[in-house]
Amino acid sequence: MGVPATHERFFSLDRRSFDDDDRRAYDGFPTNDVALMAAPFLRQLGKPSIHIVRDPVETVNSFLHLRLPRTGHEITDFINHWVTLEGETDEERWADYWEKWNRICADEATFAVQVEALSKGEVSDAFLAPIVGASGFVPTWQLMGRTVNRYHQVTENLVPPRVIERLRRAGEAYGYSV
Image (cartoon, rainbow, N blue to C red):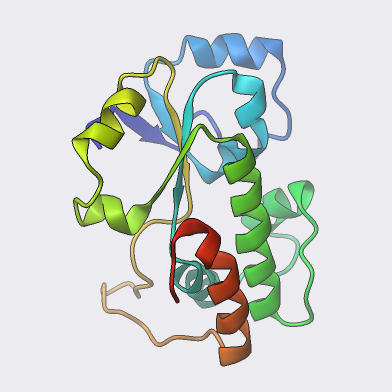
């Protein structure tokens, strides 16, 4: 997008609060920080932000391939601190994550855009100009790109049809037709 940014340098998995001292520190941060961990703090930043949303099936599939435990891992512990994931299976729980986390971001972010549209160059300069020019731009996003293994080959889809249908309905709010 042409905006200098770090990835999860200021907003990291160990952050559980954001107070006035943190806001002053972020105001002095030399660049923008792209981090899904910023979502719970967007309102407190008091600055424009972009929510970069990712295809729901791709996101859930990525988490399924990571095979994260429900607790005891820094990623799941961070998520569990902010939202209660519901569902009997991992597929249902990660679908619940996608819905709830994106709702947090959408409710607080100034703008929203699909990561796929950015990577294809489908987002116009007219859309980006006021965002990029906004002081204190703070993007948030889901894990970027397609679900790939360590050799960068697309892996099989682990998301069952019943969960894909749920994600299809949820993704419509963000312009997805799964």
